[in-house]
Image 1 (tube, rainbow, N blue to C red):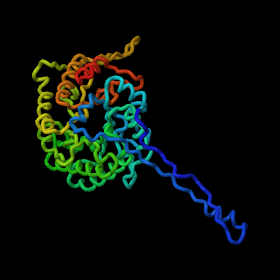
Image 2 (image 1 turned 180 degrees about the vertical axis):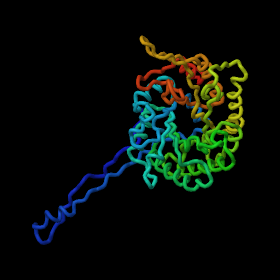
Image 3 (image 1 turned 90 degrees about the horizontal axis):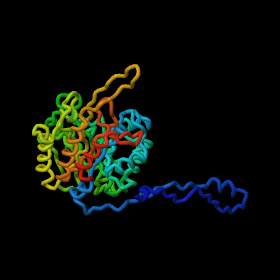
Image 4 (image 1 turned 90 degrees about the vertical axis):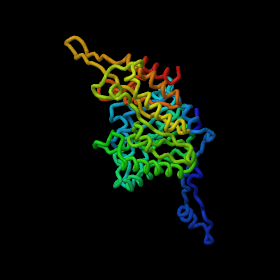
Length: 405
């Protein structure tokens, strides 16, 4: 277990100073009271040892496989109660320990900050403290953690939003970086999540020149802000994404990566093939020996290798998964409703192929687990309230693909 990151240090407590009076002792009590001084509490930040000998590719090779604490701290409500607004239970150390025990050595912690800011973009201290608490659940058991900004509605990448959003992004990340500046390389910062033109035809299409250019600008603001924050932030591994974290070659090719910073990792999301992994009403079948099934996965692997891995740039697929597809038999007078997942065997084959394909390139993949099992985007795999894995054979396939089993 790691040592505590922030050590509170009291320089002194309240002390009374009695000044001597040349007129005798009658005023001693009054003068003593008036000169009582409170020495303010100060904090000493412990900067932990950071392994700066690793290249980004060497670093990501240490991440076997990751899991997203999805639909939790990324809610867009206000106050601490928003952690549960998606319907998931409050996060506990036991949950994160169960994730590690299952074979994951990394978690991604999506966090929404925009609804926890005041008019000057100061983060609510209680919210920041709760985020830190969850980070520590993983950090203290030697897991890797990706901490990001998620579901933010203020950094849409339009030219006319560029200046204001860039300023806000810098203010938010300066506070996060300050809070965590003593943490070692196990903590990774990810600047943005899927910045895009929401609600337009450009949203998921890979973007256009304007959107891609503004995303590059935001990435540079993020990097510069964290690097200037001191402590281990000067060398922390940082993840930057293309427009919408899109995995098309055109969008990935437009991503600008600073040449003078070796600790940058490209962040990509890839629910592919879309008609099997994500699409409503899509195919429930996927076979590893069928060319049309593996085409999108193989193509992305080739593109990521050619554009980044072969050039020494590390990549993490921060979100992936294949949602369960099921049929529900309604309740009768004597029986409860039953839910039958119809793509179990296909998800198992998909997971092993997918995770193995990218593992071979040194690209860690993080399963998107939003805790949803019977409605919405059903990527749930870990039943947090019961600390149980709902689909153990799927979990085993993920681990086999990632080389953990």
